[in-house]
Amino acid sequence: MRPMRTTALLLALLVVLAACTGDDAETAEDVTETPATEASEAVADDVTETPATETPATGSTTESATPPAEEGSESVAEGTPADRQVLLDAAQASLEADTVTSTSVQEVQGQTFTTTGTFTTTPPLRGNATATLPGADGTEQSFDMVLDDTVIYYRFPSEVLPAPTEWVSVDTEATPIPGFEALQQGADDPAVQFAFLSAAEDVREVGTEQVAGVDTTHYRYTVDFSSGLESLEGEAREALEQLQAQLGDDTITAEVWIDGDDRVRQQRQTVEVQGAGEVVTTITFDDYDAPLDVQVPAADQVTPLEEVVQGLGGGPAPAGSPEPAATE
Image 1 (cartoon, rainbow, N blue to C red):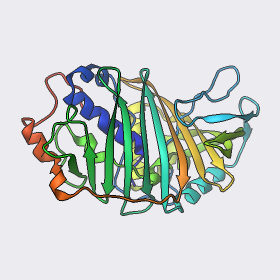
Image 2 (image 1 turned 90 degrees about the horizontal axis):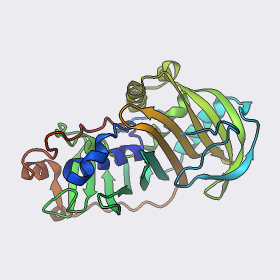
Image 3 (image 1 turned 135 degrees about the vertical axis):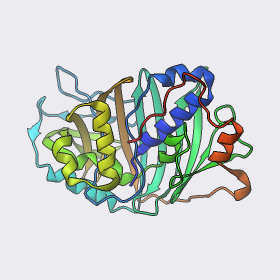
Image 4 (image 1 turned 90 degrees about the vertical axis):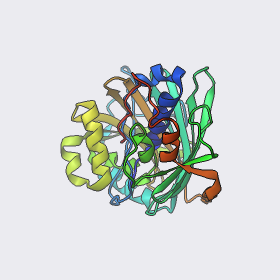
């Protein structure tokens, strides 16, 4: 399954924004992001990413821009040892839902990128999402996405990606289009989002908190790429391998909040990404088994991305524009 990757969608949109909007190119240039993967074939154990930061004095997590965990009771700074099986069980229980609704917030270089959507948890993946990015003039720009199995439909403002129709379609199984590879990886896969949990080591219970109005238990853990990758396969393994390559480190610290039904309610991770600095990603799982109504755009309202690229002269990026970010 493809990762959230909210992250995937955010990165994809960021790349398009940088490539097609001259004023934004400088900002996006510095952001070589966190990965975001795709294609669905996750194992029930696969678990995905979560960021977390600690305050040096107390060990409490810093609040992130969107659905942060509400103040709760935090134990000692280091937390008390806990069984990693709790995290594995939570990942599996979360994927037993038919759909997952999540909000992903990524903070990079003082800017915030948000994606909210609902997706099915098993193939064929289907879902809807909306992403919000900072625009060149300081305002926010929103983008819509519809996922229908292997095809992703994007609705961009015309100033970001000029197209003759309201929607642009991207075939994730087609030959990558130079300069737009990120868009072909920009779908969210709940299973990949939980991939990090399967690589968890040194799990510690921090305390109890509320996330989006739900009581949860807060855990901090270490993601050990060297040992964790052995238990993964398919897209989930590829996602973590890409992230490890970007970070150049074998371990990172992450956090997860699990509710009374043993489902993941929030994940957070803070990483140092080469070229982007500190990247904080928080994914809040707002709902499980929510109704999903996927409206695929009518054929006369859709232009294949390759035709749009041809109309732009074969590619979006002017000389000196940043290379598209690898997806997680």
